[in-house]
Image 1 (tube, rainbow, N blue to C red):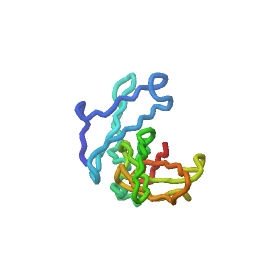
Image 2: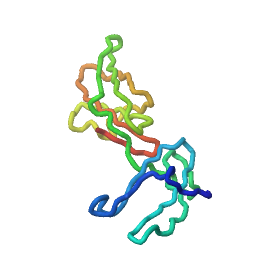
Image 3: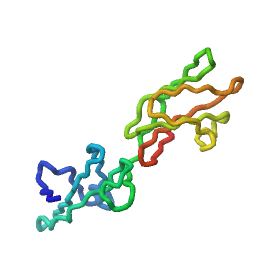
Amino acid sequence: PGFVPTEATRLATVLPPPFGDPEGKIRLVDPGAAGQVHYYIVRSFNAAGRSSDSPEFSPEVCDGADNDADGTTDDLPLPPGPVGASLRLSREAAPEAVVLEWQGAARADRYGVYRSPDAQDVYDPSHFIAETSETRYRDLPPSGAIFFYLVSSRDSCGGENSR
């Protein structure tokens, strides 16, 4: 409340079509501290000069809370990044275990682990075996079968990326 925009607090300049987004929209991701509410004012300009400022507003911030007290859980504008090719598998002998390790994904705070006997059907809710906040998981699969694994990245607002 009481925010006064200055050049030092400018986050972006949006160009009109055909130079910018066709609809003149922009998405800003402000990773401020968890639970901290940020306030914004949109200032526009036209050929005759500056228009009046927008009313002060606070966008939804996804941290699993209702930061702006509007009765809804706030959403994250982008899903978590992919785990992708960073997934590595290794085996342990006793007991026979499969160890999965991967690099942390952007905007992910936890990971879903899936195991399936069918390579085409790994990302199915029926094949979900665990959720972890670590970038390593040790699985004890049934012996004598071949399994395929997938690790998805997840965020605190329910976003999931299976790539």
